[in-house]
Amino acid sequence: MEKILLGESRLEASRIALGCMRICRKTPEEAERLILTAVEEGINYFDHADVYGFGESERYFGRILKEHPGLREKIYLQSKCALIRDQEKTLYLDTSKKHILESVDGALSRLGVDYLDTFLLHHPDALIEPEEVAEAFNLLQESGKVRYFGVSNFKTMDLKFLQSQLSQKLIVNQMQLGIAHTEVIDATNAIKLNDKDNLEHDGSVLTYMRMQHMTLQAWSPFQVRFYGGVFMNDPGYPLLNAAVQRIAREKGVDVQAVAIAWILRHPAKIQPMAGTTNPERLKRICQGSAIELSREEWYELYRATLTDEERVQLGNSQSGEGKR
Image (cartoon, helix red, strand yellow):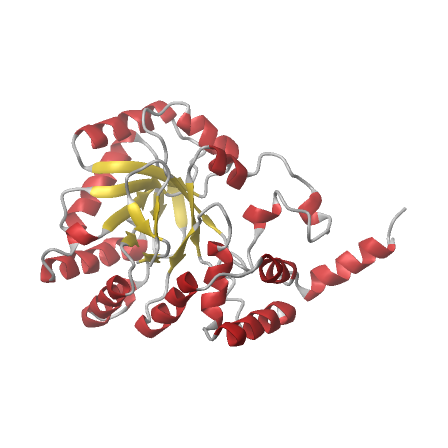
């Protein structure tokens, strides 16, 4: 699998990464098979967070590392903090210096490693104090516990504000992006020609990140909304499914590979985060790194993401219906 440099780092990461949120829902043997399959497929980047299984997913991964000496040196590990949760919902966010330092120590202990390659703030915190974050990041880097830093779900001004106080250059921002969840791209592209996507074309987080040489990590690449299920066979996306299935047949790959190839085709060198716990499905997803979509195919899929409801609204607006 092709490798990319994440941001302005020296991390030669696989184009596709594996998100480990759900591995604690499998048996230890199943989780081990998944991780080893990922490595066999060329994946060397693994994403964690303290809230994934309330730390259990990191413990699972730590046991796998212990069972396979030498594996740690072949891969990159990423973790995140900020969400304070109970079993049902997020209670609040914490990006204080104390919480960041404790979170890294907790992740290192659960994974059984001495350092993380990348550590992210999981969500923007309304009460964030960038000076505290900067102090925590400095201590973590000086101690060798974290090599590089990034964020997740940050928009343009959040990024600029935090970066202005940091000594380290943020290398990644992890956001939801997929073939049926295109808001990150919509901000700079009017090809869909509907009112919603034409509202704003300034301050695109993706454009800003490209200017700053940051890598976008795309989480939930098959999801249609935030926890809204996958687009495959969703009756609300008939044209998208028809187009993806046709292109998959033409290229001899799975539909999930086409969805991944759509993300990889973007010149920003986006790194999709596969979240499957099924080794065979992961193999089919990884096929996406071996195919390339033409401009025509990419834009066909992009236009096809409008739902039936949005198409009706688009037709009304273009015909002048409802205008004063």
